[in-house]
Image 1 (tube, rainbow, N blue to C red):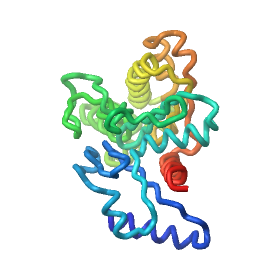
Image 2 (image 1 turned 180 degrees about the vertical axis):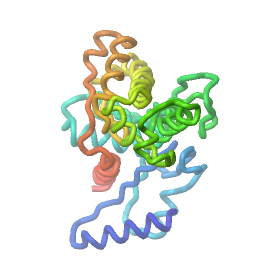
Image 3 (image 1 turned 30 degrees about the vertical axis):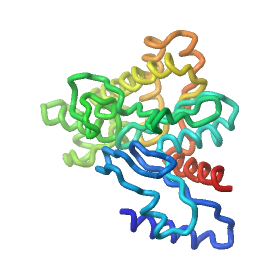
Length: 276
């Protein structure tokens, strides 16, 4: 995989030849040590103690900064979307899994070991589904692209009547958030339930973070965020129900306009700011 990253980076560098390049930013899923660039653990990539920075440095001559991908996304949300006008921001990336990045007082909050912000691995159900991280019942096992598709398939195989089956022409491997979004807008009960459930579960996690960190902005990015109101409305209701009223009213929910590019932009910004 690292050889492919080097190859892609070199190709990109060739397209911007003549521009001043001060460094290369890499956003990686998992528990990242940002200074050494070691990926201590990445459950969805199957990595443990991978020295990513050193591996890439062998093929690239520029300074390299490795950051957790959700931290990078949070930094782009803070700099580009919030334009540094807020002090405290949480970014949640809703892709295959669930990532979280935190900006406090205008700086990425990494915690004691660089592991802070892992909302996706907050425990939702103590005796729940086994997670790749080793815990049980992690939030990302119940929301996220993979989790929602899995729940839809389980319901259909159990006999649930739904237009989702027709939309994917009975090929259940084709179920994804876009299909579930389309089905919900057509009035499908299963799809609507799955979006309501995902929003409630995400809202539970966010309500806890709101009570702990009291942010001004919560930025959602990634595949599930494109569902708009289908996800946002149950998220908002759950936050209002579970968070302190003043803290809940102060937390503005924002869907990222940069979407899947948020982490890319953030990784570039972090590398530029560190090596300029």
